[in-house]
Image (cartoon, rainbow, N blue to C red; front, side, top):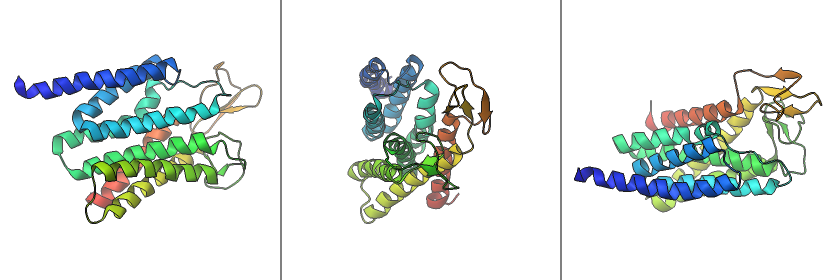
Length: 259
C-alpha cells in the first residue's frame, strides 16, 4: 500500500489544483460543465503520470489560451466542451501515460510537441483574427472571411511561432538538452507551427454551415438551423484539431524515433 501513496497524494493534489483553475474558467464561461470535468480529469492524469513539468505545460497552454480569449469580449462567449478539451489535449495525455510506463525521453519530447501544436494553433486563431489584412485560403491563397477555418494571416502565423516558442522554452528550462539545446528548441517550434498550418489546411475541407442570413459557421449556428452545408460532413473542427495534432506527433516520432 505504501508504494501507492505517492500516486494517491498526487491524484488528490492534481484534483485540487485543477479544480481551482477549472472552476475559475467555468465561472468566466471559458468552459462548459462537461469541458470543466474533462479538464480536471485530464490535468490530474497528466500530473500523476508526468509530474510538475507536464502539468506546467498544460497550465501554460490552458491559461494563455483563456487569456487570449479575452481579446474578443465583443463576441459571444464560446464555452469549450469536453470534445474541444479532448481534441486539444487528448494526444498529449496519452503520450504522458506512455511516458510513465516506458520512461523514454522521446515520449516526453513528443508530449511537448503535441502541446506546442495546440498552443500554436490556438494563439494563431485568437490573435490572427485581429489582423487588419484579409486572411487567405491556406492552399489557394484566395481571400476569405475573418475567423473562418482554413484561413491564415501573417499575424496569425507569427502568433503561432510565439506560442510554440513559449512551450519550447518550458522544455529547455525543465528538460535541458545539454549539447544541442537549440535543436530541441527549433524542432519544437517547427513542428508546433507546422501543426498549426496543417490544422488550417484541414480546415479548408471541414464541415461548415450556412445559416439563412448567409453567414458561414464552423459549427452548428446557435439556432441549430442552417440553409446549406459545405465540406466533409463528418470532419468537424474538433476532429481537425485532433487529426492535425496526431499527424504531427506521428511525423515527429518517425523523424526522431525511426518508426
